[in-house]
Image 1: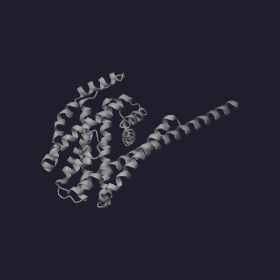
Image 2: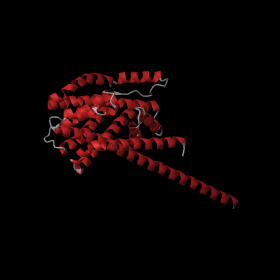
Image 3: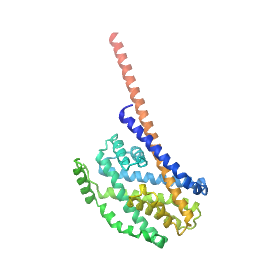
Length: 325
């Protein structure tokens, strides 16, 4: 086993281990909530999370393609989902490092991988704040009034997505790092495509939370848009409040506040905690599937290579026999 491959195996093992530990650590908090939910609700919620994670991968893939590296769905899934496991390892740099390293296997320059990774955050922030602004004020009212200050970030986030500004910031960062500029600049079309996938992701995340909310006793159609807005608000707040690791605690408080019109506090807390665990499980499922597909692909390539080498050797033997004759 080469050193590079050994490092990757170690990374995957550590990330899966930390991820499983994080899930196990949350079980005591969510056991009561899970006991109130049917297996059908939990399965549907997990399926919606997998759809949301797939939309996130396609968002990143659209940015990468716009910057000059087109990956197939399977290639993008392998790089994105396995790389995303790095967020469970202590330290905030592992996801981008992992994606930069895995992207090299498909000819993606490190700078391009890093640019696509970091661009996903302002796109999620801008689209998430817009989703929250559309869904929550009319339905949640005073319960989310304390988060109104986040609306001030909407024009800032939208301005930060202007391709001209983004390209200048990226070029400045690369110059400071003494790296060559990107071969292809970001375009408006690429930003719009990524934003479309972000909105699809918010809808899927909202669906996963809405299933949990209904399973815990909410009734009425308002629970669905409230769930979409609640999850978007919670995610954006977790990103902005950087003092909380991965938004821990901050996101749950926001979800409880946004769901106040349809759930009592105890049930809303259960929904928020169950949501965090279901999303974590979804991360591990996507990474495991991507890793398994990658392992099978590499195994198939090694088999083909070995077969080709064996055939070449056999042909050489036959050629040698013919020469001797």
